[in-house]
Image (cartoon, rainbow, N blue to C red):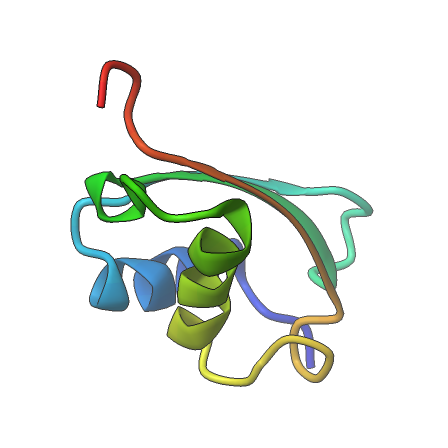
Length: 79
């Protein structure tokens, strides 16, 4: 069953409350998304660590319910 973009956003915000999230459904099928996630929690962390934080927030749904997520992460500009 496809995953709704709002559900993805809610899961990320539950673990990273200050996250600013922009999600795009790439194929219109609810399985292939891109997401830009900005959070002060990413400050001082490598891209790998930032992505791990988002994947952890998704609770193991990657590769299952959520087939593909092109992920871009960053701390807010100026941080």
